[in-house]
Length: 383
Image (tube, rainbow, N blue to C red; front, side, top):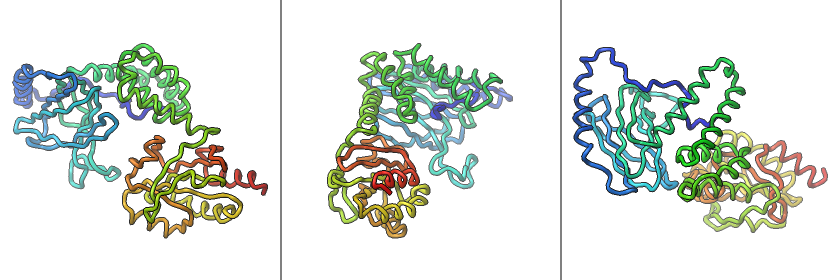
């Protein structure tokens, strides 16, 4: 599978000026800006400073988003009258940042299919360095300087760009295979690069079929990278993947039900149990619920039960969906969305996600649809 986190589209790395004189004030501002900030260097290995100039509306504000030590950060940066900004944060490892504008009707970049901010620029920034962003009008029209991780990302992007230029790779399957080969080669050739670790983390998050490769490759990275938050997260994903593999006992957990009473997974021992991660806003989940209700009614008297874990954030939405769909089984949630403690601990990134446990809590099936579940239960109960 192609990692969608990497922009594989061709992008110019040069600024083209059709009317040089019209852009002279912008260039002069940039030169003065870089001259001014060169004397201000990061004094700590954990401080990240981003200084930028964006040729857009003066005093415009951008949303800035990134993940730091596993936590999603949302902030705002505003330009001054000359289009300049400065942003400072701290991190023990490089961060990948998104700068976006409010996606609202009437704006030049409005997209009705998107909710929230529309990403205009992305960049890597490294601890202990000042990273410079030169942003021009137009999505992704940028130059980033003084970031080793950004340079690594651009080098990888150039390799993917070359794939796009090969006519023999027009077929999606052929391109995906070539992409995987280039990615693995890059990781193998650059084991000391944080960007290589980031590529490996993307595989761990979205491509579980590659876990044997990931487990072996992670051992090739130096200790300083394996001990980063990202390196530890990859190792934890590998452990959880084994803990949630068919044949393993699902780790116990506890969460509150609709009446705020604590419920443990181990409370269901002695029964075959469907552990169902879902949400009221999940269309496939809601579409599947009527069939789950029929399955529940058919087998609940024979030693089968369901434990629903909702990734909702609003209790009203959660309860309304339970009532509307007529779900009679136990439901739990901490109303934290994808930050649900159980889902986050199990690295659940999509719903619906289902596990079938035997009476001893052993996982006997996972990642199936309701039709496959019904056939499995027919086999179990001899019908």
